[in-house]
Each structure stands twice: as structure tokens, then as C-alpha cells.
Length: 420
Image (cartoon, rainbow, N blue to C red; front, top):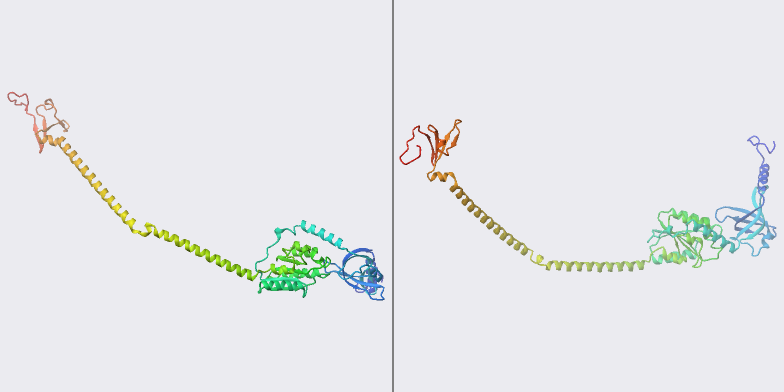
């Protein structure tokens, strides 16, 4: 069977063939420049080859590096664990052991100036993305239920935060996660602790604390992946890294920057003595305000009670009642006087009407004579010519009516021109 044909269960490749093919594929990569952080440096006396472990500072990825021991001994200062380096080499696959390593022929230490320049470029990038804006920073809770603390194991930073916080608020509760705060394992461990505390519903604030150190020691706190993880946290994060002059990028991304771990212990919880004094002060202010309000309302009530309407509430009612009674009497008298006057005038008018009426004239001896026409309708006789002989008359007197007929031959007394 050739090594170029397809493999099957009946025709597999031997291990040497697979190893040789892997080596051929890897050898095609050629030489590369790689940057990382040294986590292990092993140079045995009498051995011409040095073994190193190069780790990615932002991810849990590492690879084995081999180089001539003389290359390390010739570097000044010699590289140590935690150093940032740039190496030049080519990937090599050792067929006999089936391992992959990077065979390097040049190692360059990354200087402080270059590290600071990279941090400055990253700072401008994160600022342009808005991760440093004060508008996105959240206020710390007044009294957190539990404080998450990420710091080194048995470190002075842990002691400072716990001592100062519990000195201010003895009932303060903490959830402490100890991680590496420098070196290649710092960033992944801090990110893992951040996600753990951010998922805890009882943790209301997270403190990342570390003591002072060199620029290389504080490099993990300027890592881009860590800064983005802090910006993505839903829980407010407090940065307490280094001393006052130290300003890693974590200080700009965090919701609150504390100059030291001691300052962080004072900022995350209130002071019980100050709060007790403030409560007493507020109680005194409330008591004075209440007393002042009661005195003011009492004076107002006294002033209201001293008014005449309140001192003698029935007096105005009695006076108004008397006025109402007097007005009612005046109205009654006026109404009676008007009725009497109208009655008097009515009697006078009735007397005049009676005097001028036909009944009064009839009472004085006069009569009303009417004749009946062809239609039997009575008509008033106004002249002698209106009553020819034979005319039926109707004579109305004061006390009744008399029927009469005009005679055909009237008798005229001597000296009278009247017809009877």
C-alpha cells in the first residue's frame, strides 16, 4: 500500500507515515515572529538546549519553545518568568515523540517603552469606543448586600480592603476570589472571577485589588480582554490597583477608581459611625421641624379662637336673626299698607262706578224705554218718532221691567206737547 492513497479500515497508514506527513505540513509554515510571555524557563547545566513555555497573555494558550542555551546566557539581563518577549523561529514537529515546538534562533525582550506605547494605543482605541465615558459608569450601591473581591491570595491588598471595610461597617459581607495578579495566568483568572461574581445575584459591587508594583507587574490590568470584560459586567466594578501614581487602563474602564486598596475598603461601604451620627442629626432636625410646626399651628389656632366669630359664634347668628325678624316685620307692614291702600282705592273706584252706572240713574226715577222691532230685538227709544202708535215697549225701571203699548189716540193734556 502506498502512503499517498486513501486510508480505510483495511488499509490504514502506519504511525510513521502520519508523523512524517504532519512534519512535512508543519515545515511548510516557515519562520515566524511570535510575541508572548514566558511562563517557564528551563536551562539545565551541561545541556545545550533550553526549554521555555511561551504563553499568550490574553488567552489560555501556550506552546513549547526550544532554543540554544547559549542564546539565553548571552542575553542581558537574562529573561525570567513573566517577561514579555518576541521570538523568531520555525515550528518543528519531532517525529519520534510526536510533539510540536517552536525552534527559535532569536529572542528580543519587549522594552518598557514599547509596552507603554502599546498601552497608549490601546487607551486611545478604548476611549474612541466610549469605554471611558462617564455617562456609562454606574453609581455604587449605598450598602451592598455582598462585596465581591478579586485579589491575590493572602495579599496585603486583601487585608487592607477587608480590614478597612469591616472597620467602617462590621456587618459587611465579602465573597473573596483569590487569583494571580501578575504573570501570564493573571488575565484569564481575573476574567473567570469577574464572570463568577457578576453572575452571583447577591454580589452588588466587585472590587479588583492589587498592591503596587512595576510596570511589568501591572501589565495584566491594562490588557484589552480584561478591560472589555470589565466594561461588559452588569455589576459595578471598583478598580483598586497599585498606588496613587499607577493608572492602568482598568482604572479608566471601571465604574470607580480608587487610589489604593485601602481607599477601596472605605468607598464600597458606608461608615457606621458617620451614618449613626447622620441619623441622630436627622432625628434632631425632624424633631425641631415637628416642634416648630406644632407651635406654628398652635399659634394659628389661638389666633383663630381669639376672633369674635370664634369667641362668640352664636352672637352673629342672633344679630342676623334679629335683622331678619325686623326685615320680615317691615315687609309685612309694607304689604298690609299696600293692601289697605289698594282696597281703599278699589272702594272709591267702585263708588264712582256705582254713581255713574245706569242703576243709580234708574234709582233717581229715570227709566229705559225699548221697542221691539220686526226681528223682536229690543232697541232703545231715543225719540218720540221712534215709538209710533201700536208700538210695543219695554220699560226698564230700577226694580223691574214693564211692558207697554203706545195708544193709537194719545191723550194730550192741556199745555203739554207729549204723546201718551
